[in-house]
Image (cartoon, rainbow, N blue to C red; front, top):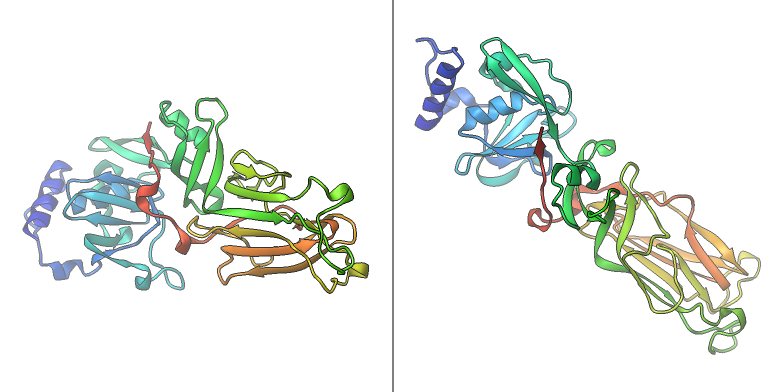
Length: 357
């Protein structure tokens, strides 16, 4: 408490706001602070601040900052783009965090911003005081693509990075940046559990006994393993035919496509021996899931059918079973992903890049 009061007085002196009536008070006067708690996964950027008041001032001078987490031990100041609101996030969304303090910025007086009090700096910028009544607006570069990461740090190499997606409410996600030595790097979502498809090397055309595939089915069987998938970050559509980080034992198959050459399914009725083609989507620990309304259909083949599509409760795992003679099944329309914050990955598993221009 003594350090907080001293920092507050020094701050007021620096910006000409101190007067004999400015006095330090007990913690009870700061009831809006949440001690040993923080709001996780909502920070835009983090900086080092010399104290709690300095962290609050940094938030006040950043247009998109609505609240902050401050570590009283290390000085880590995390600026959040959201805060607690009626009907939205509430105190139950705060998590235990030793030495951290959480605060909504609306509880802090604008005057601690000095010349930046009530500044008019635009979105994605921060205010820097120049003199008593003058300030300038500078741009925060919170990377929203691998191209921006490369622009921020030209020495950046291929690897995992934290990126903010403007079209998803600045959702923070871990993506793999590919081709960082070129002028056109691209984004991939790393799959901690490889996603795989199986086109079995067996047929049972009329359910009268299994045998090896025959005719135009020969050479189509095999297994498919995707370790990363190409995504369009504006929409999070999966580029299903990108096989840069896929492995095929024989025939090549697009992502999320199930196929076999096992049996004939007459008039849309599944045969008694069923299908054997499968594909399993597993997005566990990626922070993304398949929307519950996503469906699959026969995309090509003869006498083909979708036998089943099963989802886990979150949409992280989807298992598709399909086949024909030959029969392929894939998503109806583009395959988009949606955020699932509870499935996010650990903080240390990707690089964080922030530029100040």
